[in-house]
Image (cartoon, rainbow, N blue to C red; front, side, top):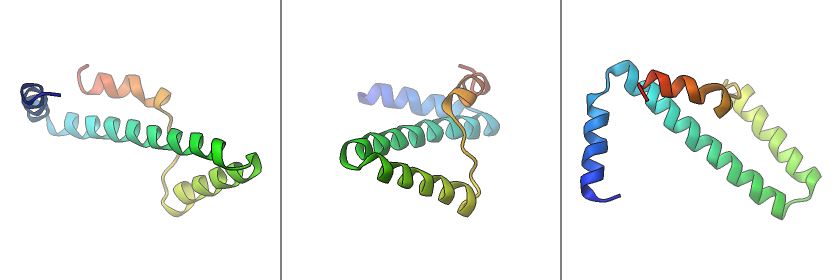
Length: 88
């Protein structure tokens, strides 16, 4: 991304309303979280035995949902809604 593209993106973000900005931020962070989860799952599939990988996934889900109170949300459930909310 060159400097002109960065400026254009920055101007677009500055043009968003408060509600659209936070909706867009949720969308961006949800995608980043999903990508990170995919990377960890791929790494575990390569490095760990299937039983070990399943135990790690179960513990991560428990930590996320029970300890942090964050329900699992998939990109498929939110992607279209998030695009609509930010006017894309």
